[in-house]
Image 1 (tube, rainbow, N blue to C red):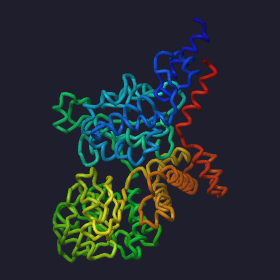
Image 2 (image 1 turned 180 degrees about the vertical axis):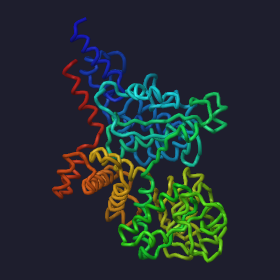
Image 3 (image 1 turned 90 degrees about the vertical axis):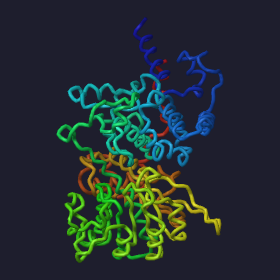
Image 4 (image 1 turned 90 degrees about the horizontal axis):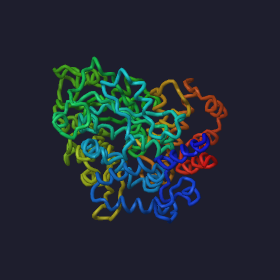
Length: 540
């Protein structure tokens, strides 16, 4: 065999075996001939639209969400173009399947469904166990889901250690569903090249006894390592999504910003992180001092209102918002705290289903013309209340956003249909990631995250605002992501951390349209698969 023949065979293998370049039944006849595929598939050459229709019909034929998850995972790992074509066309239907809430079930059952998520040899992600640390560099180099483009190094990674998954706790290696799902949002929502993403699970063992006893569990069968062997990984973007919705909620509530009282039910690190984002907003946008902004927040934990003189030792992260204006009085439950504080906004990050009871919701409606209620706990069955409950018990007055998807509510008296807001990571994470890739800042600072939240809040159209929406409609997600990415690039240049010279020059022209064009021109689309194939065609 000559060198040219050998090279030709390599190119054929790269296309025919590639989940990225695979077009399946849409492969043109001339390319089938070049790839020696005649007789290996039915003769008909289909359009991309026909492929998407068939895939959608198959998806809808599945009887459960977890079956739909498995089907979509297999499609993603065998035909990237078709998967993202389907997801982009049917975003509202597929998003709850590839991410929350279905991803929670997938993580719980990951070891059972793993063999059916991808064909042999196609990795679902990169698994790094504590035992792999001596060979970490080599193992990372082994991760080549798209070997036909070895020069395309990862631009963005999402990492989990599986210890705290969507309120479900320690799921060990099953946590892989989260980085896989988030990176699908990055691709679908912001056009990040799927070949340049890398989902990573750090397998450090698990303290989940059910997993350790499960014969199918695929992770390390040992207790989770201690802090002395574990380096912390902090996901800094979640509060920005909530902040974006809250900015718009304030406008809908009709109360001056400085008059708001914000009550958090749940006082863990996640709740405190969100509270600090909101406090920073009041400082940055409304001219408050740090102390004034901090005084707008109250925390409630399992023992009641968090105060400095409660008598128990407070965790370090709770001290920042611990109250000292309670005059010695203690408030042991959410009902008494609401009566004492008279909040305008109620946030839930407690993972306590039903915590926002009928009494709580009626109290909020009695205190406010438009009460702000954000039950943010995931998954849906751990949310503090549902959208329907919030609408019924506030008589439709509520300004609502949740951490998970809830169905629309139809008023039984008027027939009016209302859609809930969802503080979905998809509104921030994809654009934040794309902006980081384009600006190339040294770090993603709090100010950059804040600029992303502000851009998301400002991205609502006149029509969306007239409908009282807190977030843009999902079909516009790429446009929203472009706005978020452009804002991050501009802020990165302003704070002097951007390293991409092209981006720096564009920002300094003060031409927003040119910056947006630069962002959108760097968004991946399914059309790029065909363009990639044409680079191989001359060699065949």
